[in-house]
Image (cartoon, rainbow, N blue to C red; front, side):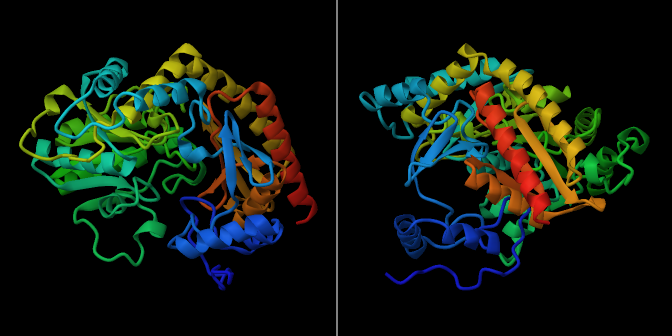
Length: 462
């Protein structure tokens, strides 16, 4: 069969969201695969529309269990990527058992009816949410949840403008890429939603406001700029952001979100946190925003909410925002899918019963210390940062520590893949490490050993 792979593998690709799938390093990887795998990859490339960060694909998988997955040749990988959906690991037995049991009774529920798993999951999310977050709506994916949050913010405020961050990602639909700030998704698409204002993100490592990186001397200029835009625009419906960027793991400085919370209240805007990728323990708390001393008006959840098995997302909103019974905020066919909700209930039960919140905090803190020590030994590691089991390693030019080194970051990625460790490269030069919360200490040590060897290998071949 004639290969349908693109001929031009050297075209420049914006890599702000993740590692590119069209590059010389990717082609070297493909060339190293066996003929059976390459045949299936060629078939995949023939039948699926090609898109950045996706098709053409990297490998062919046959099984995923626990902390990793297996490819066609029985090679196993530790999964430190997981598309942020594997908080309880792959195919957790309790999640699979719950799904199978639900399939035997009520696999699907038409939208005009309800069912017990959906009610129980909504009740559980409300019980877990802090403050007055007390109303839930489900959706089949995080992008759709973000869209519902935007609709609700418009209904609540009578306004349509939003403030979000450059370099942010909130989904791939037209409304979500209007809100998001990544060129990879916005370029060449055409007119986007009006009123989507963007501001610089809180990024202490490469702060545009204070190049010396001292947040203490900066006096929260990043947060004050948001208030400046709120005041100047005067009619903003919502500030929408992740509590911290899930890919490049940029942790806002202390006091940032409390300042923004007060500014939103002052100027009549809602604060919407997008926790599609950060919810359910990734940051060591059930909701990532719990680390920052604020409660949003709306929070979106997704990815791991379906137990890593089913597509499932949600918004959890303030009780007094239940104001739109005459408007279809979602109206999705699988809005209250009982099988997806059974998976979500089981995933939360696993998190609680296995103590995964505390585990994420403890293991994350220990690992971050080891990653910082890695940086002390290797000048190409500019910074290690993280919260819970969301960790990032910044790869830089050795002679210019403030300059990112995307080429080296990509070489490190493929060196790790060869040794059985999968993760994501974000922002061009950040190694994003997001393992399942169920990861054993032994597997974490193995992953760190693979990572350090890859760093050494790239130093020796530089």
